Image (cartoon, rainbow, N blue to C red; front, side, top):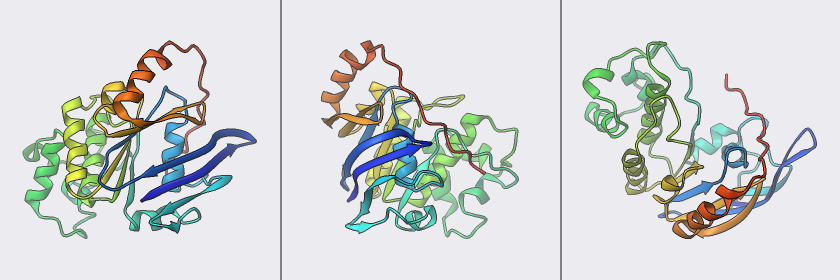
Length: 244
């Protein structure tokens, strides 16, 4: 189980997250739902342990082990991974080499082809294509998603997987989270879209850095649709960390 207990997070004295408590059990599909700026991505960055996103209070546990102070690399070794909302600007390698870490991962060509098809990219057209400025943002995001899937993580945090220049279809998102679950992983979707949250079993509804509700996704989506969409308050997002 991955668990957050009473997580607070501040930036320059501004409290962004307040008493965030979440549990993610293996065998289930989760979403963190909320309007833009509600603090959803910040929660993802805190779970992943990104630089500048250490909680100011509270603890994070994985299978009972306190991982609050562990760096990103150690959390990744334990099976936690993150698909960024904005795709990484990698370049120079072929898609095949990128997906296998330059051949260091022992992954068969047919497995790579299967994953590329899953994320909507033709293996014939993309396997040996160079990753450079010729790829669109949406193509880069799909390739990055393929790299996440090939790792078969225990916990896969997908930050707004449907955003991008050429957004993923709902059917594709469903296929991706089903694939993660079928391969022993627990998908955690960060989203503001009702239809995406409905593809999961359980949801947390976040607003202004607090958890408004938690429970079955269909119940939370109904509340979100009838209440949050009509609310006129403005969420104030934390400035995103810059990746190097």
